Length: 496
Image (cartoon, rainbow, N blue to C red; front, side):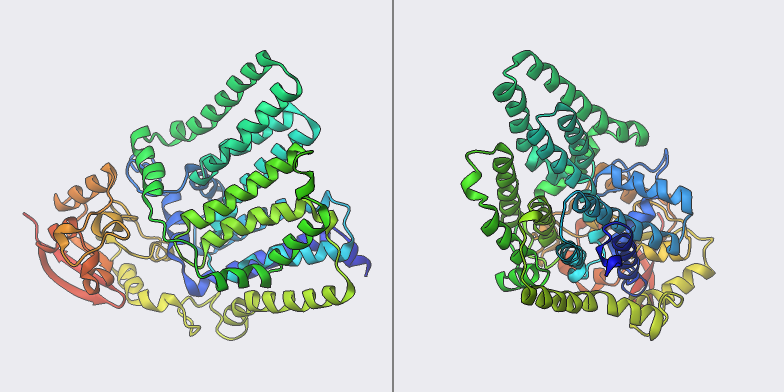
């Protein structure tokens, strides 16, 4: 059992294997978002600028990270798989680092490792972006709490740095800015009672925040107006439907042991009774309350990402108070069986489909079934006609990565050709699209002949007329001919 007692090497190997096995499901799922992020991150240049040309509501640090890793390991489908798997592994390493600082019994330690890595029970590959965000967010919270416990301004400065980095990944972090402000007040006014130092460090923190947020703007050259429209206004305009059904929500938290572990900690730590005595407990409670309120208010009703926004903060809370976890022998055995079940459901499908039964890792058109079968004809067409110009609308970006094809205009342009989520009607004139200056410019460039006269678009723009906008109608008015490419349609338009 000595090898199980090791709290560094064996869990590192385990988490590495879990990361690479789980994300290998990309070879039959071909998730749209991961393909889009990989494609556009590697095509930004002085003429193709994020937010100004390409539209996306994700922060620039994620695009920079993808481009940096790609510059080291190369460009392609397998390189993308390695990149995203390493992103997941990075998140796990941060959790492992925090756990390793705790003096835990090896049984509790491994239960936590198994619980936290069961996050993939959601089976959504695009959560890799959320894990990248929390790879910076968790150090922000850790350094913030440490600064309170140790009354150390260096940790508070580190917290500001990680907060600033998180802010150029996902806008959600601004909801937690109150924690920074209250901690700053506590350290300098309530503890040190130094108004001058409070003011000086306030300016320092604000300067650090501005510099970190301004550096990507210098690197890419996007305008503040376009960035504000894409990153802030679009995210704020997304409708809030409410959380998914409570039964599914509770089931997920129980089956991954998060809710049982959280309950055990609250019961054993005497957490509530210490709130008025310890400021770090107060900040942690506020952190959890903000997280819960955010989940219930902003959830879009899906079964994926919004649970993760609650799940991971609870993970940090559990790690912070992990020394209070007490599990008897029966509970331990039951927990292990639950974890075997969860990890089996997580890891068995990619192993069977990619290695044992269908060899999807080598054959993208495997009989898993693979989503790639929907665009096989499109791939064949592009491979035979890669010398032509195409304007892509609503296409899966993995197609262009697999064929190493160039593209014209904006890939993430379905926003301008459909309508704002929740505002779709049967009357095209009433459908209000979401568009930026870059989306509108790309649309006009195509109409003016800059990108040729061929459109490859998603079949959904034919089947679902309630998702069309006036801009798509401008293209359809010029329709000359079309042909089916399986899931996609090749549309030829007339030129003026």
